[in-house]
Every structure is written in C-alpha cells, then in structure tokens.
Amino acid sequence: MSVRAGKSALRAGVLVARKAQCGDELERESGEVLARILAWPPYIAAKTVMLYVGVRGEILTRELITHALFSDKRVALPVCGEGNVIHPVELGSPSDLVIRMYGIPEPRDASRMISKSEIDLVVVPGLMFDARGFRLGYGQGYYDRFLAGMDAVTLGMCQSGQFVRALPREAHDTRVGYVATPDGIWNCEGEL
Image (cartoon, rainbow, N blue to C red; front, top):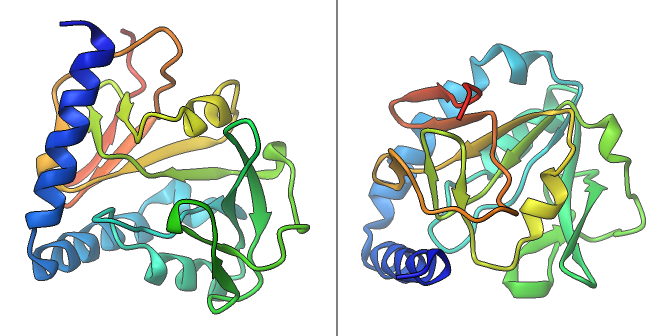
C-alpha cells in the first residue's frame, strides 16, 4: 500500500470514529487539553497566538480563544484562501465569526491579516498526530504549506486515541514541535 493510500485509509477510519463518538467524551477531553495548554509556559508567554475553531470532532477551542482574547493576547485564526493557502487573520471578539469555506468559522473581517513572523505560537488541528510531531490532516496540505519555515512554537492538539507512535508520511509533510492530549503535552522536537 502506498503512503498516500495508507493516509487515506487512516483518515477515513478517524472520521468514522469521530462521527460515532459521544459528545460528552469530546467535551471532557477538550477540557483536559485546554487545562494543560493554559498552564503551559509557551502559551503563557505568547503575545500573538494563532488558534483555530474546532469542528467535526476536533478538540473544542472556543474557550481557549476566549481565554486568549481576555488575557490580552493577539489572536489570529486561519482563513482559507485560493491555492490551498492559509492567511492568519486577527480576531477582535469571540463573537466575530462567520462560517466560510468547508463550514469552518473564520473572522468576519478577513482584511485584518497579520504576518506569520508576528506569531509566537500556532495551535494546529489534525485528525491524528504522532510522537515525531507529524500530523494527519484532511489531505489538502493547508497546514503543511503554512508551517513550512515557521519560527513560532507549533502545537498540535488531539484526543488520546488520536496520538500514535508513527504515522505514514510524505516528503512534503511538516511536523509540529509539540502535541497536546488529555494526558500531557509531548515534546516532538527530537531528531528523526
């Protein structure tokens, strides 16, 4: 089986499992992940954070977004652009969201773009992450392109069952430095 086929099979399996999951379990695990992040020194020190709004079984992030905004952090959310490119756009208020591409909430005013170089911490969604920091996304490569060459601290978030020893990977796959699960925040920055 090719790497691409292996990733597709894993993706399909995770999506089915997420649909069957109990909402209470997702809320509980999301709360545990959030508590870990709020106490994590790189989050506490970050002045500008790029977050995302969790959808379709991803770790729920609205409380994290609200906390960051009310902690006087500058918050950016991803806005999907042409050519499968992500633009970090500043969010002014937790209520200032509209549903756009792929059913994902994005900032209403997409003109408030900020430079990638201004971001201290990027929190990355994914279907699965592995101990080396590689992620299984939805297959469009948005975050692989966005994270390439990034200087910010990068943190993936997932539920316990979505953090595995190793995922199949391709040459273009970009890894995160850390992964947060209900069980802890794992440093993935070791050598391959």
